Image 1 (cartoon, rainbow, N blue to C red):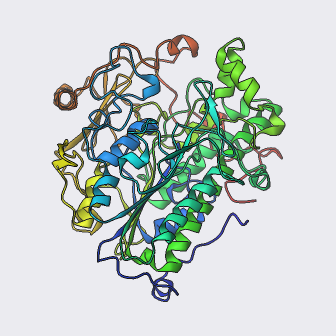
Image 2 (tube, rainbow, N blue to C red):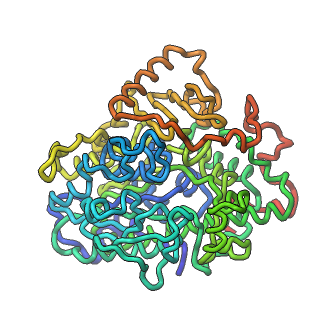
Image 3 (cartoon, rainbow, N blue to C red):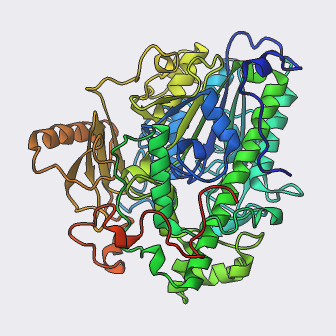
Length: 595
């Protein structure tokens, strides 16, 4: 199977002569929402990356790339906001169910499932005459009242937990040793023969759309890929696709990505990248074997992403051939920043732990098996900071690297094809009200016989149609809370409260127009702005009934990491650090270009 299948849906000529036209969809558009899991901001080529993603790049050329799109720092809160149009707290995911703090347990907003207080987007659309389909990761509840079929999906093939093997039902950690799936509302404990998550989820979405293609009803399809969440696994013939591609290491690769992002117009020409994490060594300081083995991790990660791109291309190709693409809005984004956690390394650091014992008895972690069926691999912090270029931090943090995601939106008329919008301040909770607006469906205040909370997101329709640069004015703001971390974004300003050692256990203020890496704290020089944004955050917390946790995920981390310098090294720190072109050395002969 070719990994670089080019989908010919870009040119007007191809759109006009599509061979098989679907019947009228009653003038209402179809919606296809594709979510990647743990994909970094700069991983795909159209956002400055080096991983071959021709099909996502084709979507970008036929649509609009938005550079200021915000999600939650982890997966299930983002998915709750996507399907509710609400902040994650009233949507039921004030915290992940796996990490609920003792003082949050049992409180409203911390149920760990998609709340019954909201009307789910698929249920609203279905009641208005839409077909509703889902395939992929759910992570919003496992009991019969909270599986996809109970929340509005007509057809589904869903992985209920956070992650699993790409080939089997094995879970990703000892807390969920075996994964459970649902098929059209029925629980199943086995996956189909020949199952590979990325391919099978695409197969199912195509199957569901095709089954009702000619009945005249529009559809909402939610393709929730597991890729590229760990454990990183690919079919055997994809194991060596990127051999040697990342031998130049994370420092050089970050510089290449930043340069490409500037060329594409995704960041300002004078943008500076966040410094290398203080606990990550310079790549060139590693010995030869360490360079070779750690580069292998990024090679496998790239294959997982490229395979996902191929399957997205197959789905878009199906829609183009059937004529459905002519009336379909396509939205693609990542649910949060890249994953820095290395499950295998953490387990080996605690050889007597339950996690280590389960991992040793469940997965093969030997180097020779990396990426194969039955293996377990994560790529870790050094490469996660590459995926987050140019931002600071990654998944699990409220820094930009954890909550700013790549977003591509393709509207049927392609009126602003190949555009980049860097003005719009967008939030994942906006998607539900946007789709309802585009479909001409009022937002309900009561649903299925009970009152429901009103959606908090704003419609992007004027922005998508070119009538406004942003759905939010310069005086409007968005805010966040997760694991006790807090943030407010308004205009160029970002107010941030992060735990040590990532932050200072205090409010910091950054001007993102000039400091994408969040390194220059301007709080002391701007007390009025800090006070204004703190008031906004307090309003947010009150409105959403935020309960700050009495335990959080960063406890003890300061003792585990090397001491953080008072001032991190500027980027680049000097020519001796080799952050420019690779050394004149046979080993450092790699390039971001395909080999």
